[in-house]
Length: 139
Image (cartoon, rainbow, N blue to C red; front, side, top):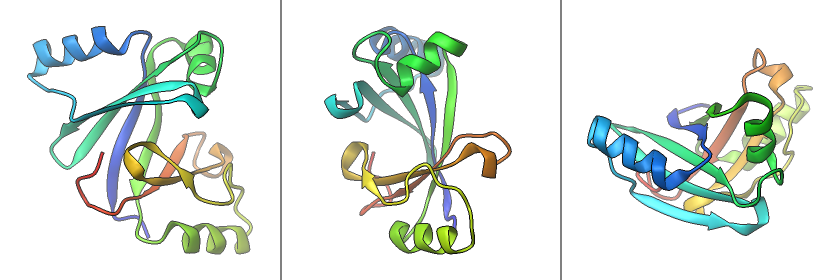
């Protein structure tokens, strides 16, 4: 079961410039910044109430999903992530019901989370990420 919107993923060319804009425009600051070499991406989480904005910058142009998104669409929203309690059980149940999943098992996400993506064909062509966190305000 979905508990709440966890974050909205936004692909950016330059995370530092984007963070300066969010701070100047909206007085928002990143709570957590990390690099995930295995995904070739740098990530910044900006809390906005109970939801976070997740800025994603590719480490190497043309390498990884974020870089591919930027090449095809330019900067913008890449996905919506929903918080769940038991990601592994949810994925098993969805698979049993015949839903297509991009990730059939949870994998490590940013800030110590566990994540999995549903195939966009199942969600009206929206990229949906499911996120399980130990703490409600991790990120």
